[in-house]
Amino acid sequence: IINTFRFWGNIGTMIVAFFRIVGGMTTARMNILSVGGVCVSLYFVLTVLLIVAGGFVTKKKRNEKPEHQIILSVFWGNLILFTICDTRWGDDNFSYRYLIVAFLITVICLGLFLDDVLYEKWGRGFLVISMAVCLLVVNTYSFLLIYNEKNNYEDLMEMAEFFDSKDPEVVLFYGDKTVYVDGRNLRVLDLTKVYKTVLTGDDFPTHIGDTLKYDYDYEGSYIIVSKKDDFNSLPAHVREGSSVLSEDLKGYYVVQYDGSIPEFF
Image (cartoon, rainbow, N blue to C red; front, side):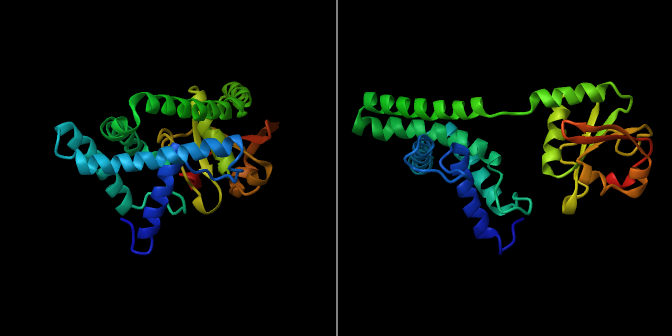
């Protein structure tokens, strides 16, 4: 449950998170007259429309049909839950993926709002064409962002082949959040090995999303993947008992350790 000091901040971050899930706000600074700035502005207007539509349906439609009552119950239940619960996990930002259900419901509300209010005032044809143009622009921009985004899929697959050629069943990714992301991605891409991730620093040890398999009853060897500097922060008995498999596997220092690591579990 959220404490009194973080209550209003929780509400504020949730509002910002709703704008971010639609695309009406971004963490990057951009010129409002640029292509990206125009698209974000359109998303911002769409977000405001979704919020207005949610309020309209809550006020005007709540007693008309059972299905309206159901979607409104889910919508407001989500907002109340994330208002009183601390879902920021100690961070300043709200994980906006939690609002996917609320977002989808506001899309339904937007349809009801357009049908009941704006169609009569502005005309069906004008609204349909306007929405189609806006969606075409912003979706094209979003597609181009994803299309031009480079990822390290090929590197990860090469790493998976390397790990699969070794005997240990468990691969431990040890390091900061960058290392952590690669470990979690490989967990999906390669089902031959059991991948586990361990964050360094204050979060040590962290196993978000890890399988519990081999946490306590594993007696085999480990492949440990880390940056060279992070390897030096491993427990002494792990560093001294490890044999090097690769000094530079796509930027990683990879060793094999034939023993238990209770500090990690």
